Structure formats: structure tokens, C-alpha cells
Length: 168
Image (tube, rainbow, N blue to C red; front, side):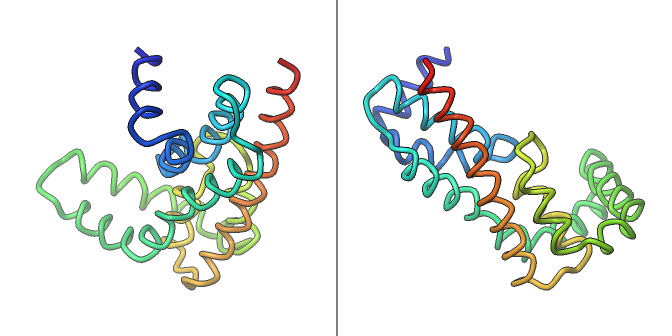
């Protein structure tokens, strides 16, 4: 199944766009796209680390401005929606942010940056943008904080992924 999906994307959009699009997907983000680029380099001849890094950072950052600008409106809409599932998600997010608001606001710029930089699932640019928007961080400050975090995570993932790929 995974092989069929991989072949479909590789034949349809190519390995470069495959890495770019993968880095936009929530949870996977650049943490999954860079190892994919390293695997392409090792198996199908050639995706250099610098191209994988650039495509992954650009793809991971593409949704960030939209999240920063619109997520509060989406959550507000979800909280008053007639769909209970949306209400639960919105209330969960709002309660979670309110509970941790003091800590988050205390470290704001660097806190969001380091949160995004940790190369673990659910700590990427999507969640960092959500956090920045929910604490009303200024748009450009939040964007820069997320960018620095994504770049740091990208460097870590590139070193790990291409180092492991070189061993095998």
C-alpha cells in the first residue's frame, strides 16, 4: 500500500514536490519530509540535502501565515457550531491554552521558537502557529518565531536523516 502511494506521488508530481507537499501536512511536517528526501537520495538517485532542507522549510512555512491570520476565527466558529465534535475540539484548545497561558506568554517569542524547533510530532509549525495566535502574539513576531523554529528543526532533521542515510 505504502509503495503504491509512493509510486503514485513520485510519478505524478516528482520527488521535489513530494517533499514540499509532505512538509505542509500537519503532524508530519518537515519532520517527515526531510527523512523522505534522504530516502529518495539513497534509493532513487539524488535529492541533495540542501534541496530537501529548502523545500521542506518552504513547504512547512506555507500554511503558517494562514494559521496565524485565521485560526482564531475558525476556533470561534467551531465553539458556536451546532456540531458537537467541533465544540469539543474548540473547547479543548481554548481550555488548554488558558491553562498554560502564563507560561506561554512568559517565554512568547523564544518559547514558540523552541517549541517548533523540537523535532517531535505535534511540536511543529502548525501547533506553534496555533499557540502564537491564541496568545495574541503579533503577526510578524509569530511568523519569525515559527520560521526560526522550523529552520532549527530542519537542520537537526537534515543532519540526522542524511547521516543515517549515509550509513546505510
